[in-house]
Length: 168
Image 1: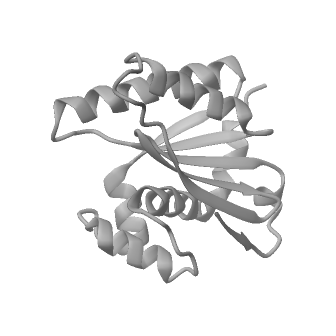
Image 2: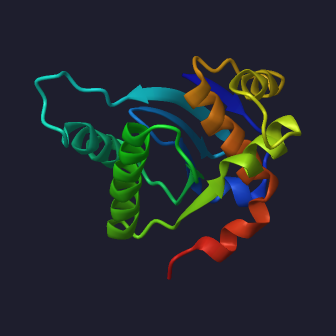
Image 3: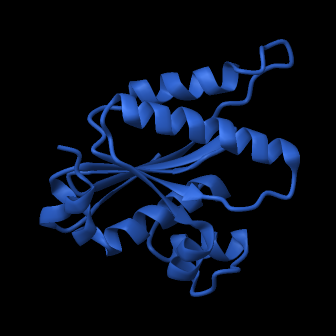
């Protein structure tokens, strides 16, 4: 886990922002009080576990997070494999249900939009995104953490939009 303290910004200190790259190896970044924490969490299960255990583990992990104000996730429009598509759909269903239950606004951001923002090219490779994140002073342990960090940088760039996401 890496921490980075940012200069004060009224929009960024009034809330706790979670960004996610959903999957069995979920990348995450949290911005709270000008400090970014990030990591990569495994929700892989053993072959003896039921098919829903990874989703229960993900929900339990979400429940362990404190005071999340808003969630942004990488919105995938196309998967090359059927299993990956099914997994993404399951994690997205758990995330959206959790956000609704806890009255936390959530929004998907297209992968190409994030890549274009961080690397200058909507078709950037995983290694190009990782390199762009490293240039911002982070050392992501994998492409999942890198994607979550890229998304939080994207969100921070448009921080004025936060006030429109609050649920009354």
